[in-house]
Image 1 (cartoon, helix red, strand yellow):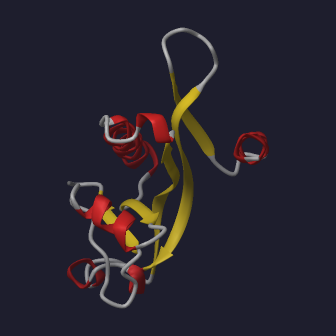
Image 2 (cartoon, rainbow, N blue to C red; image 1 turned 90 degrees about the vertical axis):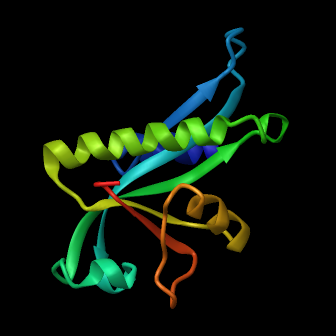
Length: 134
């Protein structure tokens, strides 16, 4: 189902999905993530960033960073997150945007993103943000 939705969103220009596959060309997807452009209300920013931006601000949103259960704990998710950050930086340089947002599924996932410098406002602990100038 996730493949079908990713394909439909990509064909419609709603998002772009990036995948990691194994080296044996078996077509097995080990991990993936999606990026989409977004406009965020600055109320969803951590307090330290709110004052320097207008009310509505452009950003990139990370969706569905997922790693196959057999490959979890092997730093594959971290590699994909770095790739997403590099793509966000390129978007920033060419079109603007303030950073990368992610809606964590739960507090455990939010803690994962916090390890990489993401921050969240107190009233939205699952909506995390990493400025492009990290």
